[in-house]
Image (tube, rainbow, N blue to C red; front, side, top):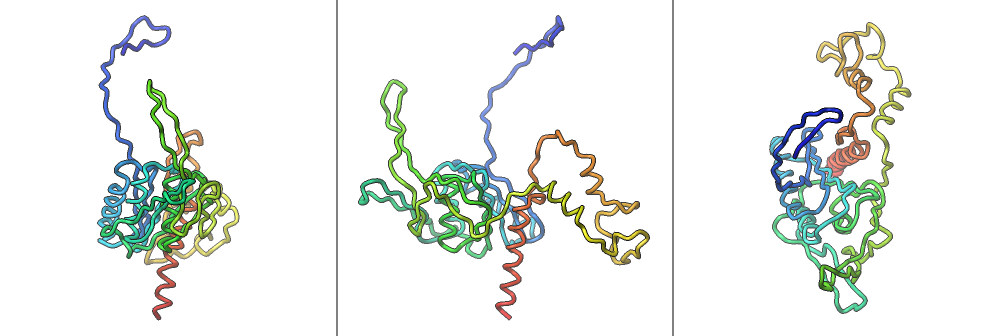
Length: 287
C-alpha cells in the first residue's frame, strides 16, 4: 500500500499482511477480594469455555475462592443457540434451558442443561438491559426461572423468534421465521423480553459522582487540620488533603475515547452490593 501526504511529492510503501482477527468476547476482572466480574459481549463458538476459564482465573486471584460473581449480559445481541445452552449449563446442571415451538405444536424442540459442569455453589447476579437480545435472553430467562441467579437491570430486547435460511440457489436465500423461544416456565420472550427481579436505572457514573460530591455531608475527615487516625491515613488523600481521584477526574479529557471500567459502573456496583447482602442474610439466617 502506497501512502502520500497531501501537498507532498514523496510517498511511502507499506506491506500489509492479512490476519485472522479473533474477537475477545469474554472480559473479566476482580472487583474486590472474593467478588468477580465477567462480561460476555456475544455468544460465539468459544463463549462457554472462555467464561469457564475466566472464572478459574478469578478464583486464582482471590485465593482460590469466589463469594459471588457479577455476570454482565448488557448490550449482548446474542449468537449461537448451542452456546446459550452451554453457558447456562455452567450454573445449572439439570432441567430445561429453552424450548422452541412453531405453528405445529407437536414439533416442539427442548434443550436441556448439560450435567457435570455447573457451579451451583457460586452466588450469581446477572445484569441485563434493553440491548440484551436472543441468546442473552435465553440464558437470563433460564437462570431466573430456575431461581439460580438474581436478575438486575432493565427489561431485555424481546427477540424470541427462531429463523432459518432456505437456499434458493444462485447465491440467493430466503430467511424465514419458523418458531418462538420459550423459557423453562413456558413464557414467550417475543416482544415482552425478560423482566429483571430488580430494576436498576442506567445512571452515568460521572454525573452520579458529581452529584454525590455536591450533596456530600461534612465529616470529621473533611475538616481542615483534623486529627489524623494513626493506624491509617485517609485513603486516597494527598499532602494537601485533596483526593488523587478528584485530581485525576478534573484532568480527564472530555473528548477522550470511552473506556469501560466495571468498578465505575453504577449497575455493577449495585449488583456487587446485592451479592454482599446475600452473604449477610445467609449468616443471619444461620444464626
